[in-house]
Image 1 (cartoon, one colour):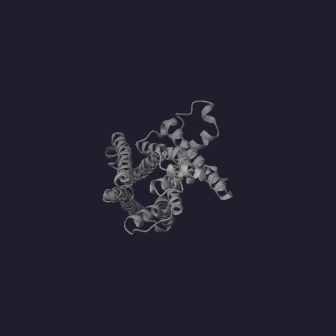
Image 2 (tube, helix red, strand yellow; image 1 turned 180 degrees about the vertical axis):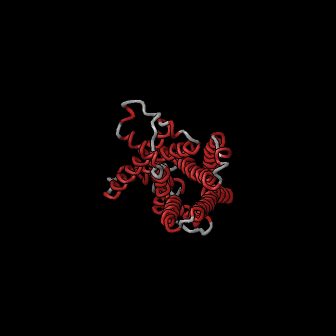
Image 3 (tube, rainbow, N blue to C red; image 1 turned 90 degrees about the vertical axis):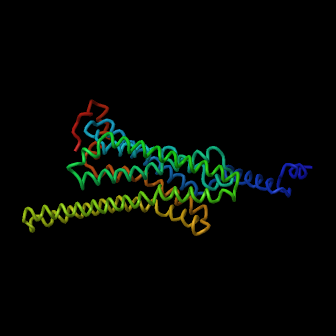
Length: 337
């Protein structure tokens, strides 16, 4: 009697394909939530929880520093503040959701929280990338056109950059969400639309910003090297200033290498994986896809160290915050250096 009842509901013994799919999804979800977690899963959760905590803590330090200390109220730091907010949300919202709702679960049992996770992931990740691109543009004018920097990069321009960055990211996320919902309805007929959405998303969300950042940072490095050598030639003391010039060039090289190296290390594998699936029609295992997706989120943890720890005034602000001195008096007008 029980077997017949299962068949009438579309259970394991039925020939109805939709019934088998539903039953398989129920089995997968039941197995996912009821099984005893393995040692590897526990270690993975501890590791990802630690990454989330460091991401939140590091970006929170940046936010408090810029908001509290008046010396840090500059147009450039407004960009870094907005970037820190996006990265903070990645650590506080996206990483925990990625732990609870993996690609495995969302593939077989898509629900509202899976769509929320994907939308937030796309929005905040793209926001972070576009902020890094805007920061590179700001640095270009600061180094390559210092005389016109304050007129071209002012508070108004920075606010426009921030608004455009967030709005673009939200629109792209909504586009992915709508195309995904349409694909569920019309499968094969929507394939070209999905392909176009993924291609445009990858192009404007990663490849174009990468080309812009690499070009800008290469130009900054060349200009910085030219300025250092010009200083050496002007003073005419090659023996005295030679080591200084090499030190300046070496520091510029290391800084730019770290900035671009960390960014490309975190993001390139994932987008190469996406490109392989779109154009190469390669089937990427879900485990690999999830790992690469989480690797991209690590960039949000590293951004505070890259863009804040390079500056001595941020390090001084962090020390004042961590020591608790800002709770003992008004240090907002203090000079941090």
